[in-house]
Image (cartoon, rainbow, N blue to C red; front, side, top):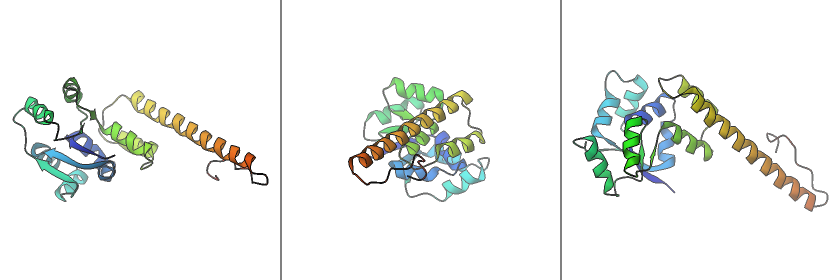
Length: 183
C-alpha cells in the first residue's frame, strides 16, 4: 500500500545526497513539499546534487503552498486529505506533529522501510549517510543495522529450515546448501 506524503527538507536532502531519492516513488504515491522546502533545496548554498535534482522537477514531487506558520501547517494536515505521512528529521517538528497524532518518519525510517521491502542495501545506505552532515547518535545507526542483521539472519534461517523440511518430505530431493548465497 502506498501512501501520500508531505516532505520536509531533511529527508529529501539526505536521500538526494546518498543517491536514494528514487526510493520515494517506490514507497509512496507521491510527495508534496511546501514551496519553502523547494526554495531551500534549490538555494545556491545547497549541495549541487540536491540543487540539480530538485531543479529537474521530478514528476512524483509536487509543490504545495506554504502555510503561514508551523501551526497552520499542522492544521492544514488535520484535514486528513493532505497526507498519510510526514517526512521530517527535525526533532522539534517531529514532536509537534506526533503530539497532534500525525504519522511521522524521517530519513532513517525511509531507509528502514526500503530495506524491509528489499529495495536497498541498508548497510551501504547508512555508510553513505554517515558521510553526510546527518546528525544522529552513531549508536542509533548501529542499533538499526544490528536489528536488520538479526532480522535478515532469522529470515535466512527460516528460509533454510523450510527448504530443509521440504527436502526431507520428498525422497531423493537434494539437500539445500547451508550457504544462503548458494540457495
